[in-house]
Figure 1 (cartoon, one colour):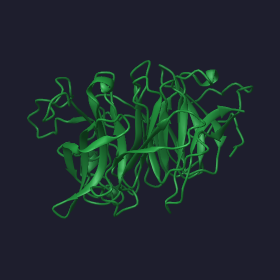
Figure 2 (cartoon, rainbow, N blue to C red; figure 1 turned 180 degrees about the vertical axis):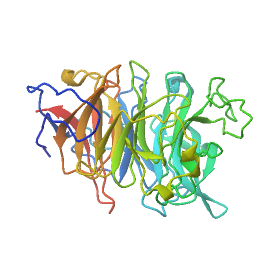
Figure 3 (cartoon, rainbow, N blue to C red; figure 1 turned 90 degrees about the vertical axis):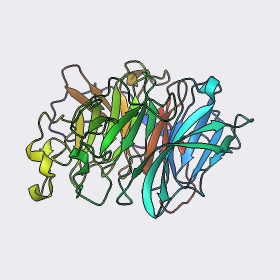
Length: 389
């Protein structure tokens, strides 16, 4: 699949600088022609020197294989299908994170939807690798946190370790539409938030510098940032430590946010750079909300329907993209690169227009970018690599 590469601006109200007219053209290519996947939603590298990649399949399986275009087989690293609740099309095994000491500790973390006492929940668990490096010990599962989910959609699902060693968890607003419970603005709820936990011991503890630690107002101390609808994929820039997240919109705008401690990213008071309409569906807390943080970038439904957050490119194969945030849209199959200056001025360019449903992007140990192709009907799909034409 080779899209037409266009160095162009997508529609948005943020002032932008035009990219160079001679910017290189890009395409995607099948990264592992002998491998197939079913509903891949995450791709991670443990960055342990093993040159392995791990792909999360939504139904509950994690596959591992050598990062080699000629690889012929992937192994089942973990099978949680008996524990994962897949009753809704946004539910399932959604995220995987390796701590910085994975090579020593052999522990890793997953995020998935489950059932408990007839209720839907998000469960984040810690597991360990078994005696063989390509097989996890499913019996080692230890639940770190469980959060009730009122509806089947907007589960978030990304887990990631920051450069500070803390575990960050993306939580959607709990679903339905329009955040009917006002969860994203409710600081007594963990829904519609980015959470930050110290998981160096069990049970987890609250980091000393979490923004609401020690408050007496009933705010959840796990909260790092709030006002998010469904943060679908977050990542840290390997060089700067800056946290980026895509936030899927309701009806009009898709967002890219730079996440900072204690900030309110506006949902359901705002969508993109605009007040969320209809006004009578906004949270009662919107009247008191102050200092709402605008997205770094937003695009309308003429460009796509569901943002897929990505990674700041730090590889070497595509030098023109170094330092640019590469992200995509699930519905339109477009892949863009975004650069945001210290003054907030944003420059966005379309890299490639594909016919792939892009559920996730991933990076290997060298920082090269991969694209997960998704098929809701569970037909086999591929993992693609972003390349220069």
